[in-house]
Image: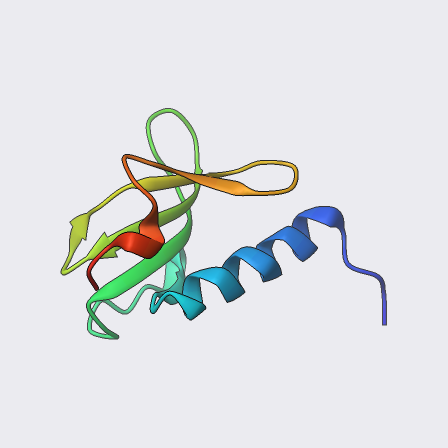
Length: 84
């Protein structure tokens, strides 16, 4: 089994953090909007380029997240504080 890249390790950590906060993680290309109220889509294409995670609450875009070297940040507010 090959070793994970730093980006793959970061994605695993971020996914785990989002799941711990109650988010359902899905790939953009295979999104199932009926899966739950709080869905975080990965690699969503935007006009400015793909965003790493796009959290949706009850089908509304609630924020977008950018991955950084050792952490991620949410634009607008901390997604773990969202009421999902």
